[in-house]
Image (cartoon, rainbow, N blue to C red; front, side, top):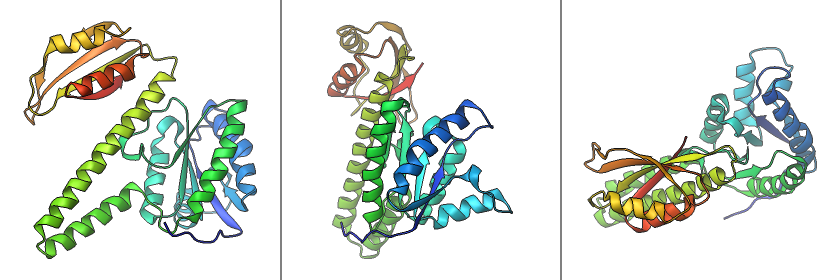
Length: 282
């Protein structure tokens, strides 16, 4: 990828869940901004601006949007999966400018952004030191990219390529593009499952997980096969729903298991036997 020389006197805008004054959310956000983001970005010649620190007259929403569209860098705190933060992240993605996301360990990111540049951190003293190092490295890499990548631009680029291929009436090229897109989606799903598994495994508050199972390639849903694979682990089956037929003709069942320690082992075993597996936290 082509690189460009670093800039000086840059602006970094921070988007974050804020909550009310003195709330737990506000204290956590201010701690992250003041203890990590500001000192780390100052070393890289950034001025850091947070929405609740804007004191210019006028609409705060308008000023936030302007910063999202014009700042050299945006650091997005995705902890709590705040709807406002997600909206602001989408605005930034639409401008195709550098974004670095940070999120507290244990957060299960939405599928759409699970594969994006994201730093997971622990909210403790050691976490501050670790995040400082990771943030500095990731910001430096992001600012050197000449063409930042994000989900919005991947879709736009794919549509443009498809239109060009269709205009040329190139069936072979269209087939290859479609297959590449399918492979990309499959890789994203796998990566997302890995991140979800890591988040679930590191969360001590999770005591049970729902496994949503769908046989692939028109296979029948064999309950005995499912029971054998789950019972061979340390997990205990708490419930198993009646199989139901989906609109696409496939069959789905939901198995609720206790614990989470063997989740990766169970998932891999089910996938090896031809099941599509997703999770839902109870």
